[in-house]
Length: 119
Image (cartoon, rainbow, N blue to C red; front, side, top):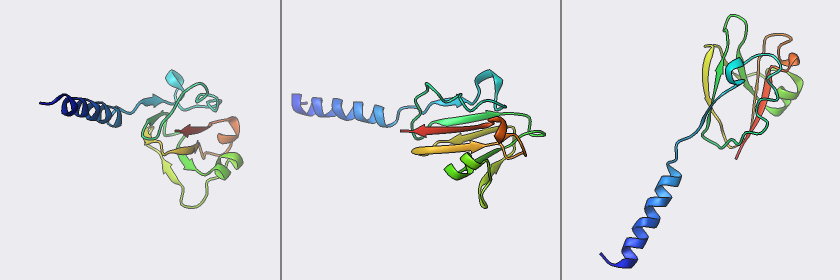
């Protein structure tokens, strides 16, 4: 095998490794789970599209709703929003801003919401 072909294969192998790198899974709220006052949890973390967020909570008392920026800021659940209720929800991040709230009355206002920007 020629030196040029060997170099090309090495470069291709590195590109494939980068493109197929394992996505990171984050547990929202760490050991405290999805709870009140979790809105600051994303600070200092670097998220990329394809990473997963795991929301752990008691489904008798909470839920997770993927909302728009307006839903996040206004603590509202727009029509057609996806509501998660398993208590162990795993959600893959899309590129850009991703917003999540708890839609139980008063919970979002108690900062049970997060905004995550994925590169």
